[in-house]
Length: 378
Image 1 (cartoon, rainbow, N blue to C red):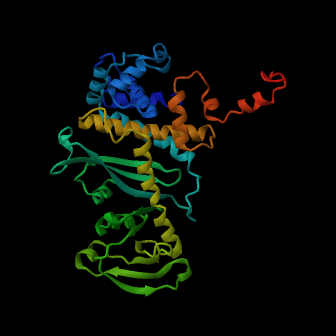
Image 2 (cartoon, rainbow, N blue to C red):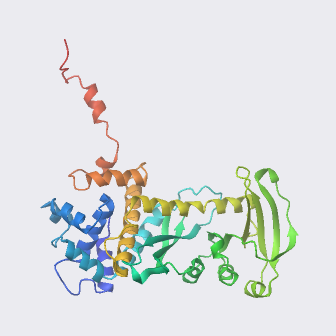
Image 3 (cartoon, rainbow, N blue to C red):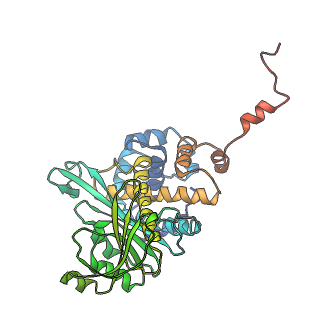
Protein backbone atom coordinates (compact mmCIF):
# COMPACT_ATOMS: atom_id res chain seq x y z
CA UNK A 1 0.00 0.00 0.00
CA UNK A 2 2.98 2.33 0.41
CA UNK A 3 3.31 2.43 -3.36
CA UNK A 4 -0.06 4.21 -3.49
CA UNK A 5 -0.01 8.04 -3.53
CA UNK A 6 -2.34 8.59 -0.57
CA UNK A 7 -2.36 12.36 -1.03
CA UNK A 8 -3.73 11.94 -4.54
CA UNK A 9 -6.34 9.54 -3.20
CA UNK A 10 -7.53 12.13 -0.70
CA UNK A 11 -7.82 14.66 -3.52
CA UNK A 12 -10.00 12.26 -5.50
CA UNK A 13 -12.20 11.70 -2.44
CA UNK A 14 -12.54 15.44 -1.81
CA UNK A 15 -13.37 16.09 -5.47
CA UNK A 16 -16.56 14.04 -5.19
CA UNK A 17 -17.31 14.50 -1.49
CA UNK A 18 -16.70 10.85 -0.72
CA UNK A 19 -16.21 11.32 3.02
CA UNK A 20 -18.52 14.31 3.40
CA UNK A 21 -20.87 12.21 5.54
CA UNK A 22 -18.67 10.23 7.91
CA UNK A 23 -20.19 6.85 8.74
CA UNK A 24 -17.18 5.20 10.35
CA UNK A 25 -16.14 3.58 7.06
CA UNK A 26 -14.14 5.86 4.79
CA UNK A 27 -13.36 5.61 1.09
CA UNK A 28 -9.84 4.50 2.06
CA UNK A 29 -11.25 1.65 4.18
CA UNK A 30 -13.43 0.70 1.22
CA UNK A 31 -10.49 0.76 -1.18
CA UNK A 32 -8.32 -1.38 1.12
CA UNK A 33 -11.12 -3.91 1.56
CA UNK A 34 -11.84 -4.17 -2.17
CA UNK A 35 -8.12 -4.30 -3.05
CA UNK A 36 -7.73 -7.11 -0.51
CA UNK A 37 -10.62 -8.93 -2.24
CA UNK A 38 -8.93 -8.55 -5.63
CA UNK A 39 -5.51 -9.69 -4.45
CA UNK A 40 -6.79 -12.71 -2.52
CA UNK A 41 -9.68 -13.76 -4.80
CA UNK A 42 -12.53 -13.37 -2.31
CA UNK A 43 -15.91 -14.72 -3.42
CA UNK A 44 -18.26 -12.23 -1.73
CA UNK A 45 -18.80 -9.62 0.96
CA UNK A 46 -19.20 -12.22 3.74
CA UNK A 47 -15.93 -13.78 2.62
CA UNK A 48 -14.19 -10.39 2.76
CA UNK A 49 -15.64 -9.66 6.20
CA UNK A 50 -14.68 -13.04 7.67
CA UNK A 51 -11.12 -12.97 6.36
CA UNK A 52 -10.37 -9.39 7.38
CA UNK A 53 -11.87 -9.83 10.85
CA UNK A 54 -9.69 -12.89 11.40
CA UNK A 55 -6.60 -10.70 10.97
CA UNK A 56 -7.43 -8.69 14.06
CA UNK A 57 -4.87 -6.05 15.04
CA UNK A 58 -3.06 -6.21 11.73
CA UNK A 59 -5.83 -4.18 10.11
CA UNK A 60 -4.94 -1.01 12.03
CA UNK A 61 -1.32 -1.19 10.91
CA UNK A 62 -2.50 -1.66 7.31
CA UNK A 63 -4.45 1.59 7.44
CA UNK A 64 -7.95 0.36 8.31
CA UNK A 65 -9.77 2.67 10.68
CA UNK A 66 -13.37 1.54 10.31
CA UNK A 67 -14.95 -1.72 11.35
CA UNK A 68 -15.16 -4.07 8.38
CA UNK A 69 -18.67 -5.46 8.06
CA UNK A 70 -20.57 -6.88 5.13
CA UNK A 71 -23.41 -4.36 5.36
CA UNK A 72 -21.04 -1.41 5.80
CA UNK A 73 -18.98 -2.41 2.76
CA UNK A 74 -22.13 -2.96 0.70
CA UNK A 75 -23.40 0.52 1.66
CA UNK A 76 -20.04 2.05 0.75
CA UNK A 77 -20.03 0.37 -2.69
CA UNK A 78 -23.46 1.82 -3.36
CA UNK A 79 -22.91 5.28 -1.86
CA UNK A 80 -19.31 6.30 -2.57
CA UNK A 81 -19.06 7.72 -6.08
CA UNK A 82 -17.32 5.31 -8.47
CA UNK A 83 -15.56 8.28 -10.09
CA UNK A 84 -13.33 8.53 -6.99
CA UNK A 85 -11.74 5.20 -7.88
CA UNK A 86 -11.77 5.93 -11.62
CA UNK A 87 -9.79 9.13 -11.07
CA UNK A 88 -7.41 7.36 -8.70
CA UNK A 89 -6.80 4.61 -11.27
CA UNK A 90 -5.90 7.34 -13.77
CA UNK A 91 -3.39 8.72 -11.25
CA UNK A 92 -1.73 5.28 -11.05
CA UNK A 93 -1.77 5.00 -14.84
CA UNK A 94 0.10 8.31 -15.13
CA UNK A 95 2.71 6.91 -12.72
CA UNK A 96 3.01 3.54 -14.50
CA UNK A 97 3.28 4.66 -18.12
CA UNK A 98 6.72 6.36 -17.87
CA UNK A 99 8.08 3.27 -16.10
CA UNK A 100 7.24 1.12 -19.15
CA UNK A 101 7.92 3.72 -21.87
CA UNK A 102 11.08 1.95 -23.06
CA UNK A 103 9.65 -1.58 -23.06
CA UNK A 104 9.69 -3.31 -26.48
CA UNK A 105 6.42 -3.76 -28.36
CA UNK A 106 7.55 -6.28 -30.98
CA UNK A 107 7.31 -3.75 -33.84
CA UNK A 108 10.03 -1.56 -35.32
CA UNK A 109 8.28 1.66 -34.42
CA UNK A 110 9.56 4.79 -32.72
CA UNK A 111 6.12 6.29 -32.07
CA UNK A 112 3.61 5.34 -29.37
CA UNK A 113 1.30 2.45 -30.24
CA UNK A 114 -2.19 2.01 -28.78
CA UNK A 115 -4.74 -0.78 -29.25
CA UNK A 116 -8.45 -0.05 -28.89
CA UNK A 117 -11.06 -2.73 -28.22
CA UNK A 118 -13.84 -3.72 -25.83
CA UNK A 119 -14.87 -6.76 -23.84
CA UNK A 120 -18.37 -7.72 -22.74
CA UNK A 121 -19.02 -8.78 -19.14
CA UNK A 122 -22.23 -10.83 -18.91
CA UNK A 123 -24.64 -10.16 -16.05
CA UNK A 124 -27.91 -11.59 -14.77
CA UNK A 125 -30.81 -9.43 -15.98
CA UNK A 126 -32.92 -10.00 -12.86
CA UNK A 127 -30.09 -8.74 -10.61
CA UNK A 128 -28.78 -6.00 -12.92
CA UNK A 129 -31.89 -4.58 -14.68
CA UNK A 130 -30.13 -1.25 -15.31
CA UNK A 131 -27.69 -3.04 -17.67
CA UNK A 132 -30.24 -4.60 -20.03
CA UNK A 133 -28.49 -5.84 -23.15
CA UNK A 134 -30.93 -8.18 -24.84
CA UNK A 135 -34.38 -9.51 -24.06
CA UNK A 136 -33.18 -12.01 -21.44
CA UNK A 137 -29.62 -10.83 -20.87
CA UNK A 138 -27.73 -8.01 -19.17
CA UNK A 139 -24.16 -6.93 -19.77
CA UNK A 140 -21.66 -4.12 -19.44
CA UNK A 141 -18.87 -3.29 -21.84
CA UNK A 142 -15.36 -2.33 -20.85
CA UNK A 143 -13.90 -0.18 -23.65
CA UNK A 144 -10.12 0.04 -23.29
CA UNK A 145 -7.31 1.90 -25.01
CA UNK A 146 -4.14 -0.03 -24.21
CA UNK A 147 -0.64 1.42 -24.38
CA UNK A 148 1.35 -1.48 -25.83
CA UNK A 149 4.48 -0.28 -24.02
CA UNK A 150 3.90 -2.42 -20.93
CA UNK A 151 0.22 -3.09 -21.69
CA UNK A 152 -0.99 -0.26 -19.45
CA UNK A 153 -4.59 0.89 -20.04
CA UNK A 154 -4.66 4.63 -20.74
CA UNK A 155 -8.40 5.04 -21.29
CA UNK A 156 -11.32 2.96 -19.99
CA UNK A 157 -15.02 3.57 -20.43
CA UNK A 158 -17.61 1.30 -18.80
CA UNK A 159 -20.96 1.33 -20.57
CA UNK A 160 -24.01 -0.89 -20.88
CA UNK A 161 -23.79 -3.66 -23.46
CA UNK A 162 -25.88 -1.85 -26.07
CA UNK A 163 -23.32 0.90 -26.71
CA UNK A 164 -21.56 0.18 -30.02
CA UNK A 165 -17.77 0.13 -29.99
CA UNK A 166 -17.42 2.82 -32.63
CA UNK A 167 -19.09 5.43 -30.39
CA UNK A 168 -16.08 5.33 -28.08
CA UNK A 169 -13.99 7.04 -30.75
CA UNK A 170 -15.87 10.23 -29.84
CA UNK A 171 -14.35 10.11 -26.34
CA UNK A 172 -10.73 9.64 -27.41
CA UNK A 173 -8.46 12.61 -28.03
CA UNK A 174 -5.84 11.38 -30.55
CA UNK A 175 -2.19 11.95 -29.71
CA UNK A 176 -0.25 13.57 -32.57
CA UNK A 177 2.24 11.17 -34.13
CA UNK A 178 0.91 8.07 -32.31
CA UNK A 179 -0.49 4.94 -33.95
CA UNK A 180 -3.90 3.48 -33.07
CA UNK A 181 -4.74 -0.06 -34.10
CA UNK A 182 -8.37 -1.23 -34.21
CA UNK A 183 -10.57 -4.02 -35.52
CA UNK A 184 -13.39 -3.76 -38.07
CA UNK A 185 -15.91 -2.57 -35.48
CA UNK A 186 -14.27 0.86 -35.55
CA UNK A 187 -14.57 1.50 -39.28
CA UNK A 188 -16.36 4.84 -39.35
CA UNK A 189 -14.72 7.23 -41.79
CA UNK A 190 -16.06 10.41 -40.26
CA UNK A 191 -14.55 9.45 -36.90
CA UNK A 192 -11.34 8.09 -38.45
CA UNK A 193 -10.83 11.39 -40.25
CA UNK A 194 -10.45 13.03 -36.84
CA UNK A 195 -7.22 11.02 -36.41
CA UNK A 196 -5.90 12.41 -39.70
CA UNK A 197 -6.83 15.96 -38.75
CA UNK A 198 -5.06 15.43 -35.40
CA UNK A 199 -1.85 14.24 -37.14
CA UNK A 200 -2.30 10.77 -35.62
CA UNK A 201 -2.17 7.46 -37.50
CA UNK A 202 -4.56 4.53 -37.50
CA UNK A 203 -4.40 0.94 -38.72
CA UNK A 204 -7.79 -0.72 -39.00
CA UNK A 205 -8.99 -3.91 -40.58
CA UNK A 206 -11.41 -2.99 -43.34
CA UNK A 207 -14.87 -4.38 -44.03
CA UNK A 208 -15.82 -6.26 -47.19
CA UNK A 209 -18.54 -3.75 -48.13
CA UNK A 210 -16.22 -0.72 -48.18
CA UNK A 211 -16.07 0.53 -51.79
CA UNK A 212 -12.60 1.68 -52.82
CA UNK A 213 -10.91 2.75 -56.03
CA UNK A 214 -7.23 2.04 -56.55
CA UNK A 215 -5.03 4.98 -57.55
CA UNK A 216 -1.43 3.74 -57.17
CA UNK A 217 0.34 0.45 -56.54
CA UNK A 218 3.66 -0.16 -54.79
CA UNK A 219 5.94 -3.18 -55.28
CA UNK A 220 5.81 -5.77 -52.46
CA UNK A 221 7.79 -8.81 -51.39
CA UNK A 222 5.24 -11.63 -51.47
CA UNK A 223 7.57 -13.93 -49.53
CA UNK A 224 6.70 -11.89 -46.42
CA UNK A 225 2.97 -12.53 -46.85
CA UNK A 226 2.17 -9.04 -48.15
CA UNK A 227 0.10 -9.38 -51.32
CA UNK A 228 -0.54 -5.76 -52.30
CA UNK A 229 0.09 -2.18 -51.23
CA UNK A 230 -2.27 0.34 -52.83
CA UNK A 231 -3.18 3.99 -52.50
CA UNK A 232 -6.97 4.16 -52.69
CA UNK A 233 -9.84 6.61 -52.37
CA UNK A 234 -13.37 6.07 -51.10
CA UNK A 235 -15.95 6.17 -53.88
CA UNK A 236 -19.24 5.88 -52.00
CA UNK A 237 -20.70 9.38 -51.75
CA UNK A 238 -21.20 9.44 -47.97
CA UNK A 239 -17.84 7.82 -47.25
CA UNK A 240 -15.94 10.11 -49.63
CA UNK A 241 -17.58 13.13 -48.05
CA UNK A 242 -16.66 11.91 -44.55
CA UNK A 243 -13.06 11.03 -45.52
CA UNK A 244 -11.95 13.00 -48.61
CA UNK A 245 -8.22 12.17 -48.38
CA UNK A 246 -6.50 9.13 -49.92
CA UNK A 247 -5.98 5.99 -47.86
CA UNK A 248 -3.50 3.15 -48.00
CA UNK A 249 -4.74 -0.43 -48.35
CA UNK A 250 -2.41 -3.29 -47.48
CA UNK A 251 -3.43 -6.86 -48.29
CA UNK A 252 -1.77 -9.64 -46.30
CA UNK A 253 -1.93 -13.44 -46.42
CA UNK A 254 -1.13 -15.33 -43.24
CA UNK A 255 1.14 -18.10 -44.53
CA UNK A 256 0.27 -20.40 -41.60
CA UNK A 257 -3.53 -20.10 -41.50
CA UNK A 258 -3.94 -19.13 -45.17
CA UNK A 259 -6.27 -16.36 -44.03
CA UNK A 260 -6.29 -13.07 -45.96
CA UNK A 261 -6.51 -9.66 -44.28
CA UNK A 262 -6.93 -6.16 -45.63
CA UNK A 263 -5.91 -3.13 -43.64
CA UNK A 264 -6.56 0.57 -44.10
CA UNK A 265 -4.19 3.20 -42.76
CA UNK A 266 -3.46 6.88 -43.21
CA UNK A 267 0.30 6.31 -42.95
CA UNK A 268 2.15 6.17 -46.28
CA UNK A 269 5.76 6.00 -45.07
CA UNK A 270 6.12 2.77 -43.07
CA UNK A 271 6.86 -0.48 -44.95
CA UNK A 272 3.79 -2.57 -45.73
CA UNK A 273 5.07 -5.42 -43.57
CA UNK A 274 5.33 -3.08 -40.57
CA UNK A 275 1.68 -2.12 -41.06
CA UNK A 276 0.71 -5.80 -40.79
CA UNK A 277 2.90 -6.22 -37.69
CA UNK A 278 1.19 -3.25 -36.07
CA UNK A 279 -2.18 -4.91 -36.55
CA UNK A 280 -0.82 -8.19 -35.19
CA UNK A 281 0.21 -6.32 -32.03
CA UNK A 282 -3.49 -5.57 -31.47
CA UNK A 283 -3.77 -9.07 -30.01
CA UNK A 284 -2.22 -7.71 -26.81
CA UNK A 285 -5.48 -6.00 -25.87
CA UNK A 286 -7.28 -9.35 -26.21
CA UNK A 287 -4.71 -10.93 -23.90
CA UNK A 288 -5.19 -8.05 -21.46
CA UNK A 289 -8.94 -8.71 -21.27
CA UNK A 290 -8.35 -12.44 -20.86
CA UNK A 291 -5.77 -11.82 -18.12
CA UNK A 292 -7.88 -9.53 -15.94
CA UNK A 293 -10.94 -11.76 -16.30
CA UNK A 294 -8.95 -14.78 -15.17
CA UNK A 295 -6.88 -13.21 -12.39
CA UNK A 296 -9.02 -10.34 -11.05
CA UNK A 297 -12.63 -10.11 -9.86
CA UNK A 298 -14.55 -8.44 -12.68
CA UNK A 299 -16.85 -11.29 -13.77
CA UNK A 300 -18.68 -11.73 -10.45
CA UNK A 301 -19.65 -8.69 -8.44
CA UNK A 302 -20.08 -7.86 -4.76
CA UNK A 303 -22.98 -5.46 -5.43
CA UNK A 304 -25.76 -5.16 -7.99
CA UNK A 305 -26.06 -1.38 -8.44
CA UNK A 306 -24.38 0.43 -11.32
CA UNK A 307 -22.19 2.33 -8.86
CA UNK A 308 -21.04 -0.89 -7.16
CA UNK A 309 -20.19 -2.57 -10.48
CA UNK A 310 -18.19 0.39 -11.78
CA UNK A 311 -16.45 0.78 -8.40
CA UNK A 312 -15.33 -2.85 -8.45
CA UNK A 313 -14.06 -2.70 -12.04
CA UNK A 314 -12.09 0.50 -11.46
CA UNK A 315 -10.53 -0.84 -8.26
CA UNK A 316 -9.57 -4.01 -10.15
CA UNK A 317 -7.90 -1.86 -12.83
CA UNK A 318 -6.05 0.15 -10.17
CA UNK A 319 -4.81 -3.07 -8.54
CA UNK A 320 -3.54 -4.29 -11.93
CA UNK A 321 -1.67 -1.02 -12.47
CA UNK A 322 -0.40 -1.01 -8.86
CA UNK A 323 1.14 -4.47 -9.31
CA UNK A 324 2.71 -3.25 -12.57
CA UNK A 325 4.23 -0.29 -10.70
CA UNK A 326 5.58 -2.54 -7.92
CA UNK A 327 7.09 -4.88 -10.51
CA UNK A 328 8.98 -2.08 -12.25
CA UNK A 329 10.08 -0.14 -9.18
CA UNK A 330 11.45 -3.25 -7.49
CA UNK A 331 13.11 -4.45 -10.70
CA UNK A 332 11.37 -7.84 -10.60
CA UNK A 333 11.68 -10.40 -13.37
CA UNK A 334 8.47 -12.13 -12.26
CA UNK A 335 5.33 -11.82 -14.38
CA UNK A 336 2.29 -9.96 -13.06
CA UNK A 337 0.56 -13.32 -12.61
CA UNK A 338 3.39 -14.69 -10.46
CA UNK A 339 3.43 -11.52 -8.33
CA UNK A 340 -0.32 -11.76 -7.76
CA UNK A 341 -0.03 -15.40 -6.74
CA UNK A 342 2.71 -14.61 -4.20
CA UNK A 343 0.85 -11.61 -2.80
CA UNK A 344 -2.31 -13.68 -2.38
CA UNK A 345 -0.61 -15.83 0.28
CA UNK A 346 1.81 -13.30 1.83
CA UNK A 347 -0.35 -10.18 1.95
CA UNK A 348 -0.33 -9.81 5.75
CA UNK A 349 3.01 -11.44 6.48
CA UNK A 350 5.60 -9.28 8.25
CA UNK A 351 8.10 -9.83 5.46
CA UNK A 352 9.76 -7.12 3.35
CA UNK A 353 7.97 -7.11 0.01
CA UNK A 354 11.19 -7.42 -1.97
CA UNK A 355 12.18 -10.48 0.05
CA UNK A 356 8.78 -12.07 -0.52
CA UNK A 357 8.84 -11.45 -4.26
CA UNK A 358 12.41 -12.50 -4.96
CA UNK A 359 13.50 -16.14 -5.28
CA UNK A 360 14.99 -17.43 -2.05
CA UNK A 361 18.09 -19.61 -1.87
CA UNK A 362 17.52 -20.54 1.78
CA UNK A 363 17.09 -24.22 0.87
CA UNK A 364 20.46 -24.26 -0.87
CA UNK A 365 22.10 -22.51 2.09
CA UNK A 366 20.65 -25.09 4.44
CA UNK A 367 21.93 -27.99 2.37
CA UNK A 368 25.37 -26.46 2.04
CA UNK A 369 25.75 -25.64 5.73
CA UNK A 370 28.59 -27.58 7.35
CA UNK A 371 27.00 -27.11 10.77
CA UNK A 372 23.81 -28.95 9.81
CA UNK A 373 23.82 -32.41 11.39
CA UNK A 374 22.55 -35.43 9.52
CA UNK A 375 19.94 -37.25 11.59
CA UNK A 376 20.51 -40.53 9.75
CA UNK A 377 24.30 -40.43 9.66
CA UNK A 378 25.83 -43.73 10.71
